[in-house]
Image (tube, rainbow, N blue to C red; front, side, top):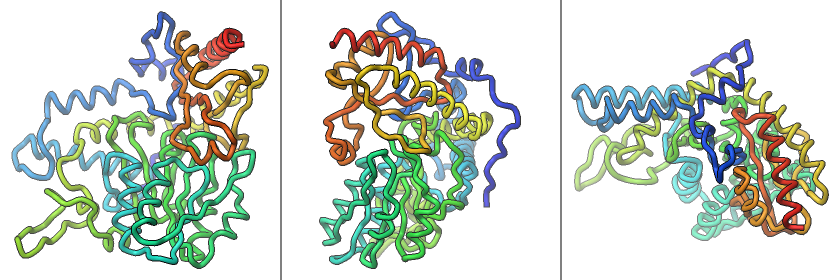
Length: 414
């Protein structure tokens, strides 16, 4: 078993850390960029960019195929990234399927685990706060199997109603899908407790870790779920990278999701013998350079220490919330006791898209819209929100500039 890297004893110099991110030096509309959209995608440190560039300049070859030097170098670098990511999550490398991200990972579970197993009369339990990537695949499976979807509701403060959730874990429920951290509310769900209750009832659990892995220490073994999905581009890595962790017994029993090269041991027209997990689920040429970049991102985050990252972002969140509370007519959605650095809000009398456009003119990047979480926004009775999402590379000065830009935009729309 891989053990997570120890957190460095000394907290990083956050001003120096910020200088590691080239894009944060640019201007937008003649103003210094304030990037408050890290829940959408994280920015990349120079070490990640250089790792991708270095692969293409010096080592570019396909993996697990050629015995020549470049092929061996590419394969070793690719598999080393798998080992790094496994250590980061405290899982076995042979239990970690590398894929394009959480959306692919959850669809892999849907089509390779759920579709062969579920039938009419079975239920999939999904929380109200899920991203569409943890809703739509289950709807597609339900349509094809006759299973039904049951919704675990939330409270007004953005927390899961745990008592209602546990009551909903009836014998017909075969699978539970839940986010570790909400991409809209920032709510940190007690996934260890939730998965324990699911396990006691024989319910398989799928945890969406997209918004957790970039911002806090994740120990998948401690969580005790059956499946855990992450996305690389939110954790300082390249786009088109991510992973699915699954219990070994699931991986061994699941049929492949996609067929092709590399996921086989032997092919004849009489049949195919599939490769061992996790390679059984990795057909075709992967995003090799991207995963080498993701390995560099893991190195970077481990050097910082995830405990330091979480502490820094908690500090920034407190400041951001304090500034937003000063804005007249502003409503924050989600006040969970434990939150990641994500704040969704609306200002009375101003459309979210209009505010986002005016903020962009001031160099401030926030997201507006439904954030791939329509059912959640329906719960609050709103069509869209603004979302400011922070990362450790943001600063208190940026929060002050954001607050000033928001006040200016509010006055223009008044």
